[in-house]
Length: 562
Ligand code: ATP
Ligand code: MG
Image (cartoon, rainbow, N blue to C red; front, side, top):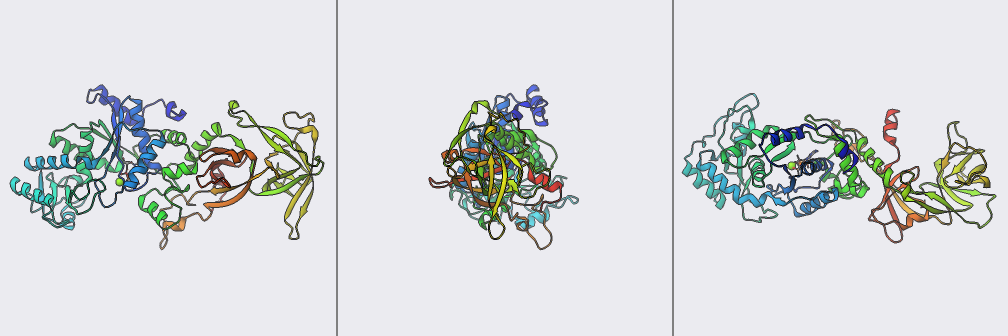
């Protein structure tokens, strides 16, 4: 458990409801489930639901199932099933047992016949459009279907023939017989089965009628002995129907509890958006490090701990709201600050030459791996008279508060010496090509006898020892808070951040050539980075997970963000 998962003391409304039901003896255990539809990759919103369902089961010593809600044969694929399982495991959870709603098709069919037999369901010959028209509106009651009063025998005969494939797709449906005047539209004789000839990813062509979500979900929960069926707010209005089916069938009756979906600014998590981003090549796939998918965050370098801790931190709510993306970014910063070894890499190198350094001399300096974690120890970094520093760490003329290196000024080189800038060399176009400094031998880091104080410390690498690495500087995919909100004539694609990826070749300290795919490090003063699977033995590729500080927040505060 992460700190955030542990530290919360007061119980949320779901835990209070569970406590009350356990105390009242309504249920004797906590049995939850995570029920994804295998029609896409999981996103950070799903992570919230996963953490909640598995987290509650863990907290109460109960169990959590994984159930694929695969009742929609036209949109579902096995590729998604595998990816979803991988993502859940990566987040650190293991299901008690694995199920598919399609495994219950036979049982659901039998139960449908029972409802017909008991007079609670009927075969309706209205088309989809007619059903909608008869349904009424929020302010107007619906009208009974002319087929509502068919005899039980006729209904049973027609339903069986629906299953046998005697009727055209969409020509008939099985509907629950409830109340066309109910203020809750979900109770106005909802459809339970539709005729649809489509090959299902698991049941193949066995069925030409498929059950609806409402007719499947609660019954699947019941069959698995789920006690708390936790779902998002848009299903609040479906709860009476959930309860109606369980009551009419007289089966184990779980309790449905709703919470608000996780929504984060700057992200678009809807499947239709994500699918379009992938299909049209705006990103390089579902696991592009800029995607809000769990596999995207994994490749970006997020840790499961940071995502779990973020979800715990955000908590559960009964009302929809938007969470600031900065909280997710802070969660990964906080985790990596504790565990990521520090290394030096220069992303935009300019030469710094120490003119009084003995020619050819190489000195090993000792650098601290992680100031937050003494057990991480120290490492040796080669220091010499030919270095690279970050171009932006030098200014010929600088304002007073510029505590890096300026002409005539001094700065400390991390784990090295204080250097004084003497001279600047430029090319014919006026670009700085080399900075000439002297070093002060008395000022070696850790053994400084000089008493000299300088305000700034900058990172560097030794030119001769540096390794070239590719660095992918990822930034937010969208540059606005609500990418889905668009002006007339525009689409969400107009809100794409044109600078969401910048690729540079950096000079890195030799230790960075020893890293393996998936290793996370802090590039000192720059941010956290992870070794991408695109890395080869010739070239290491690093993804920027997140910069050290929240530059977006600051830019926005100053009105400079575009
Ligand atoms: P989307 O269309 O965004 O993929 P969905 O609700 O259609 O979302 P499902 O596969 O049906 O996706 O969802 C599986 C579970 O995850 C459901 O219980 C659902 O309520 C939950 N879930 C989906 N999105 C979120 C979210 N943003 N926050 C919290 N839970 C979510
Ligand atoms: Mg869905």
